[in-house]
Amino acid sequence: MNEIFITGTDTEVGKTFISSLLIKYIKQHKKKVLGFKPIAAGAEYAFGELVNDDALTLLESGNVSVPYNIINPYIFEQAIAPHIAAQESKKCITLGGLNASYKSIKTRLDPEGYLITEGAGGWALPINEEDYLYDWVKAQNLNVILVVGLKLGCLNHALLTHAHMKSIGVNCIGWIANHIDPSMHAQQQNIDSLIARLPMPLLAVAPFYNDSESEKPKLQVYKVLSDVLNLK
Ligand SMILES: Nc1ncnc2c1ncn2[C@@H]1O[C@H](COP(=O)(O)OP(=O)(O)OP(=O)(O)O)[C@@H](O)[C@H]1O
Ligand SMILES: C[C@H](N)[C@H](N)CCCCCC(=O)O
Ligand SMILES: [Mg+2]
Image (cartoon, protein in one colour):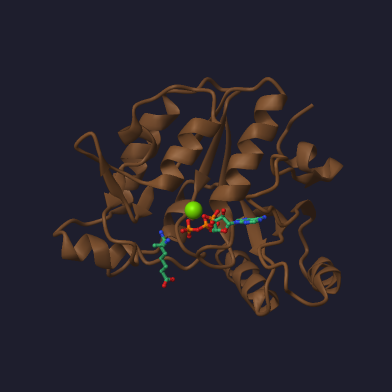
């Protein structure tokens, strides 16, 4: 199975936006693909069940039909740091629980399928008093793609995020530049600054997408994306 973990330089930098475009890109290659949002904070009740927008977006983007709770095992109503939301609702996010959910979702895909997991927040997300979501990513030996939300400050966030991945032995297979701030100055120079400093390839660039535009958002994809995703 092809398994990828999508992290970002921060919360709200476009992990869901990019994950959804990547899932669509993989579907264009006639592959089965499923999104996984293990931990979601910020949810509403629909038909008596708590649901989260990111998880719904991932579910709708893929082409494998599974019940909601399979793709989003940990869900909290408040849009706050998940380990705090868990404490407040007297629940506990555990590495064991994440492993069990991951094992369960993997039974829904065959070995040629793609499982795209979206993190929550940035790379260093506490999940309880001891563990971080990256401990789980490392334990599962997942390849990571870093979404860089292009805004002032993203160079520091991207470089520190990658430095930490390297220090714990997590494999980052590439990064994606996401134009989230149309007013940002020197956008291309910022991309070039990261190309020069990050050792992994730039896989794609997402333009700023204006909701009022009739066109669907599109990734500008580099050939290396299909290579790292094993898509022929
Ligand atoms: N390229 C883009 N153009 C325009 N808007 C974008 C773009 N990328 C993301 N956005 C918008 O920015 C907001 C944050 O994006 P998104 O929800 O994907 O971030 P996230 O990193 O997944 O956040 P979270 O940490 O909550 O999971 C959303 O409203 C999304 O539609
Ligand atoms: C609520 C938000 N949209 C995300 N789901 C969770 C972000 C957690 C950030 C934790 C932190 O780094 O401070
Ligand atoms: Mg998201």
